[in-house]
Length: 138
Image 1 (cartoon, helix red, strand yellow):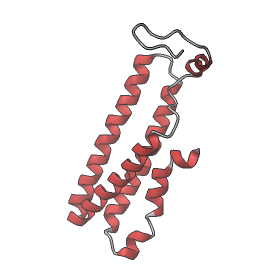
Image 2 (spheres, one colour):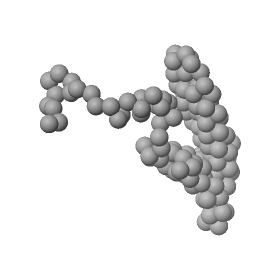
Image 3 (tube, helix red, strand yellow):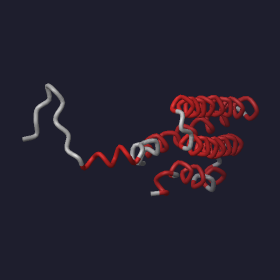
């Protein structure tokens, strides 16, 4: 389901009208929301590109690089909100990033892993003998 895959994006966008109504720091929200949405778009693009790469080392490097790059960009955005705006803006940015990441991480367990090839699922119907030392299912 696409809505579960992008539930973190929905959370970030759905909180937008409540920030000014509640009197929360708008600059911190805008920095965090823009950063989250742009890094989410970038990581999605890089993961799709990694799926098309045949070399496993290059694929793993691209995925690890995108995760580490996103981590640095998010951390720098929180620091930017803190020092360019103020302490409240930094806290708002960190809170929004934490909430979005929590939803993103939780939903990653429900989404199918795109790196699993269809060939591994095609062997699910064939019965295999139990591994040595494991109890048999008979």
